[in-house]
Image (cartoon, rainbow, N blue to C red):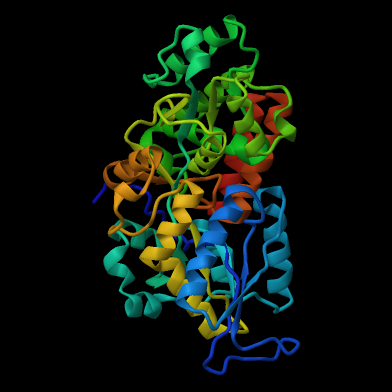
Length: 427
């Protein structure tokens, strides 16, 4: 269905946090007398559109499996970092939830290598999921012939959100995506000259890493960017140097308080009219809907400058941990996650698109329809900031380097740190 250069060696399966369930088939009931008919699901979806999406999915689960109690083990804060730390502690203590949320891709590598996840290949066969998930997605979810998680959605990371009034006031056509990063930088300068103090809204460290990855894609192309994760593209390549220089220039146009803002606060700057652009994944769609804005009127989107024809992919997925107290109910939860009704309810609320190929695009809004078309036709690459491209330890090293760069703006030091991180990760 689409070209995929994202088949990264050792790419691990999806998702960051799903919590366990219990069933009516006599599951282990040893955890403090918990019921066998419950499922504890661990996520970081504790507020905003993410919580709305989870609630919609749980609503479908309650309809499909009314005899199983859903236990919401969401951990708030830190864009998922708090949840990941709490999950690590539980797994280390051999106290796993029944299922936990995770990002599709290499982020699951550490869990798989630690033998903390169960193989779900037979579940895929029983549920017919290899027939309704695209083959390229199945490839991304497969590690050494096994599948370890079930995606609830597909998100796109390389999306630039545009405040049409701000751009039009500066004489810029908001519907015309810049051909490349240099053209976008010219538009940013035009906005700044027109009186927009911070043309590009930016937030905390992970949003910086997401912006940086879109710059890498633009300057290296899909194949060159993907090569960063298997060693076929060197991090001291001239293209990476160019990307760092472009990223450095982009930081000249961001809000000064970016380091202390989460993604929703950065998106709000755009909605408030204090910025013209925000590079953010399509979970931001819900923020514009909540503001009462109409796609194509108050706001629009385009693939981030220089990345037209590329879909920078991530997916939220759910797992079945080894030792899940309520294994059968957990499989019931995974059944809902994979189902057409579950994916429809979840993605309509969250702004993402379904992983299933049998979804009807007419069920989704104008932005989501553009994402469905791109997912079906564009070249797919894996997101760095959201766990698909690199294992946790590697992405953490890159994140630290990006965070340091935001303060010192030392381009040579950033590239040296990126080379060292790759050498460490790839051995």
